[in-house]
Length: 411
Image 1 (cartoon, one colour):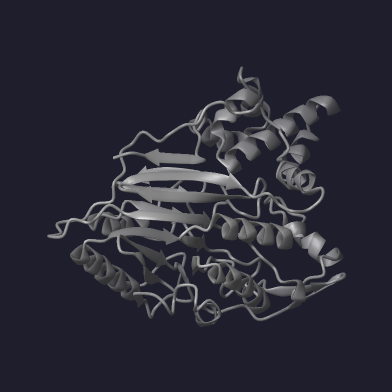
Image 2 (cartoon, rainbow, N blue to C red):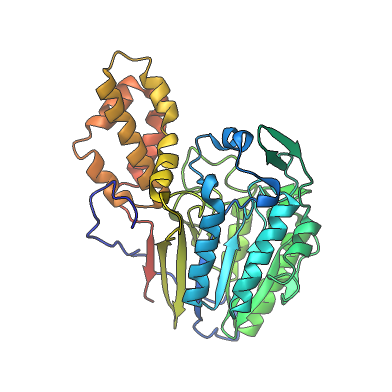
């Protein structure tokens, strides 16, 4: 059971906007898609071959991004065990598979994924910005670190060749993008925005390849589900640069012009979704960040159901550690509060509010966000006394009352 830091939810919010993947001017009306898929993002796995979890590694991970890296082996193994037990048709991993792109981490994760495919489950993977051409690829031993080779795009394709690239209907030569025929009614367009020539972007050659695949799917009367690592829609106005890919609008219009209206991504580590230019993008929160969520995505005769699932991490004391990692994200707040005249008790109360607010935002539970500051007193204090944080919370206020852990549409 996860640690209860907020009042239990009684309400499940369903998205009210109509969503339907349709063909664009096709003579062949696509059959309604049917598929049972598990989606995860941002595992940030690191191989024990290059990491002893010693002093140096602990200093590196003692940051403020909330990743539960001291238990990443247990998180990954517990998650994959749940996938095998649930037996979906496919597992889609939308990038940042590794902590720092080291070849050993990719190789060892690929070996773990082979057990999933051995259970009869299709595995489809994409690189994220951490996975390829990473200048911080390193090994860690006691109090030292040493630079190690990072994967290139070709390395990534070679290591994960049986998890999409080699079995694809078509593969792009300019990136690690590919089109995969999942079943008779659904194709998955996996888009790579992390090549050496187009980091956080895409090349003209890739755009030509994408359009060719979309035309082919339209002609064949097949639905297309698209996925990538970085974002096509702005989920938070403060986080566009480094999150939304270059020229995202052009790609959105290309996709929706051929009836692709659902895009899966990650990268921000938050659980969220938005609709822009008729494209609904769902970000699945980071598997490496507490509460370590992945998602179930089901298509049933045009009905779409997406909901998150918390991984039951098989490790003693994990929930306490997970909450500790979330709490570390409030350290900048504690430093700012220390410069005020507030009492230590008051400082702790406000820092705890920040921790709970971040937990809500990263897990997608913005319904419970309302409960942690029902009278708005904390927000008023932040605006007056901590203006450096006020813009961030204004963005959170826009999502107050929404549950981004669920997306359900009935056509």
